Length: 463
Length: 121
Image (cartoon, rainbow over all chains, first blue to last red; front, side, top):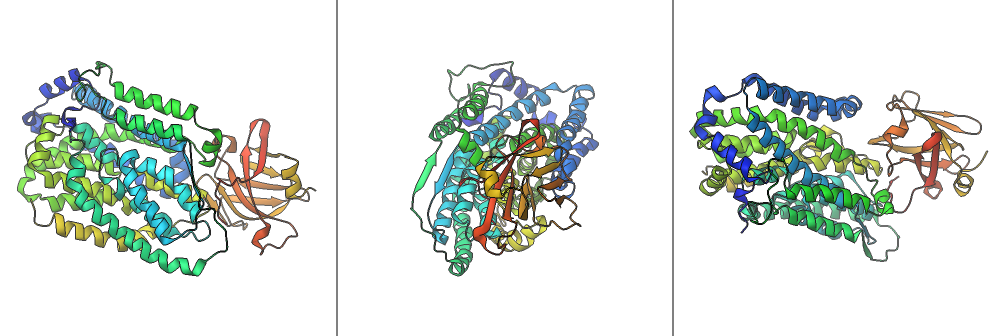
């Protein structure tokens, strides 16, 4: 097994040593070293604007979100530099951000150069097969990559009878729940991996929750789709062919996935690039962005209506999120340590889930990982302690991993690909439900009962 | 005045100036997509878009956008579903799906949507 507990976001040993020696749990929990509670405000403001901007003032938001994210991030940077004299937290966060954005951007661009055409009649079983396939490959190319790759063929297959529920179940399974098995699957799990959670820990501890959940959601889809298909028979003839174009980009995707493990702490001969805040892994990923875009076929990019805006948005917003969440992480960890016994896996499951529904699930996961570790007097900034935590308290880590990924499907803003899929669907002429329509008609009645059963079976009165 | 099919056959371009599009034909517009906006309301009370019909051409104003050249990137397009004036609007065989691409010198390339570009009626 890959010793990912030693993998640092930046992949350089020197910074790791510096961080582990500079910050100790005692220090991190000492009130004297804590940031002011007011410093959580930029984080709250940014998350609130991310949640409300695209819905209530989207033209203002589209134009100004880069400035807003950077300015709010700079408030925190300034505070840490001049009031706390803490450059280590900032350096560590910068390195983590670069790793995060390298993975997301490379998966996004490489999958944008692939075109799948399925000339088959739409049936509930074919649709369910695509949703299951998407749920599995989401763990290899990420929920973003799988959504990009499959949403257009999925819409095209169903073009004679497409309804909003088709897209909604696609968001449930491919864009969210499917990606719960590996750190590549969904951004929260990748952040956990960067902090020191072993790469294969998630699949070992989550697969038996993932599998029944996926099957139940798919079964509900088949039930709804079977009732709909009989009323919309068409006389269109189909060749039955499945075409796959842009194979070289599949190779690029493979390189990106392999590069996740290229780190000096995992493979000894991989050189460290210290003091640079990036490693060989990030250089490979960023190279794949350039190479896969430059070498992609024009007609595939045109067919996919490829543009950089979705990933540009993620890049800007996460500059702000990563910076502003530094004080939030430290304060939550401290508070959880104080509250101690009152917090159990069930509480963490619901708290992570509810917040992941409305806030971005990646920072939410990290905040609750910090809180859980704080409860046991451990520090999320120390990979060795993250490893110890995953071994001693797996049910706690499982609760927030499952909740952060699953509940991302509850709203359009719960996870990055949700809005992307909604946008592609609307650009394809499908009138999607409103923000509240999505929740009231679909996510609350379908997902909440399933997630409640997950809680009752796996987390209720445990830990 | 040219028909839509003649415009497509002759590869005749339209024009755009800022948020204003000029199409070298007249038609009934059924549905329009620009960026993430899916527009089906073309009544005078619609705030986002205004359609103006002239004897030989049509104008569309997009009030939520300043310059379409900045908004629509290389592989994107404004997508519309239209019906030629005089043809039966209730017969879906008459529906024509078009992609409008803002280009240099205020030119607006008009082409029929390709088989890979999806725009469902």
